Image: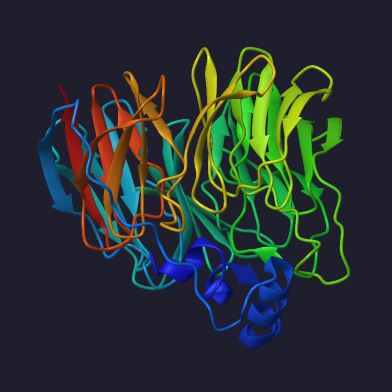
Length: 394
């Protein structure tokens, strides 16, 4: 990823608004109180004693990715298969253990902007022209196509006969998994200026939990769309639209009866699932996805520091600042390690107990935009150019 995406520079790729990029950058630098001509320098890679052996299980190029569009087209995993999608309308199913292609399809008329999602026997993607396309997960055959309100920038999710879709205009819709017909719509107005992207909703039992660009986290009934609770995680402050950005672009993660979520220019919070009560917060700004285990919540902040927070109160277990301005992805936990990707295509393995580096491998020379994916005993790194590499930890 270009270094400027760590906190500024090519912010035009991150922000959605009908204003000039020069205006965006000038305002952003005023907020940061720095010289507009300066660029944050990525931290140099440091040498360290390796304490982990990592070997490549397989690798391959699966489509063209979405490097130029800054789209986080994260591969999805289900039932021994990995599903990938690229900007050019290509969707693929790959054997997770071998890396061999099971099926592949391409619709050159479609520009995929969100997905893939997998569930209810479907593989689903969203497009820049507001279409949701569903394919049979086993064969790749088209099942249905539904027009929604605007561009889809996050993976559709499905459970119990329902597909949940987030659109770029702030709407969240429930479609029938069998036929794609609209069941209900939740409409939330969005601010003038937002980060490019939408937080992926999470379905937990009969709840849909999702964050929005106004700093709110909501829980809806999966089948009716009725609001169960709504909680504000961050209050917009400041005079400019840029200063008032409080996007919740991370996917909520759930452990026990608590949802954990992060907000840009806001907080990381633990929220009770039964009533939306905020259990604790930390003033950490993030737009990356989170990871959780039975002891800690793992967070990558918007400057590049990786944090481990104690689940009971959000206090620090450790933090690793050595990836500052390298645009690290959200963390993924595997075995006793926490892993992030960066703008130069590296995966960084950190000890989950103390945050010390244990190993570093390079997936590709292109940036990694999506969190590493854990698939059984494998860890997958996926570059923005479509290169997918599976690693085994020893």
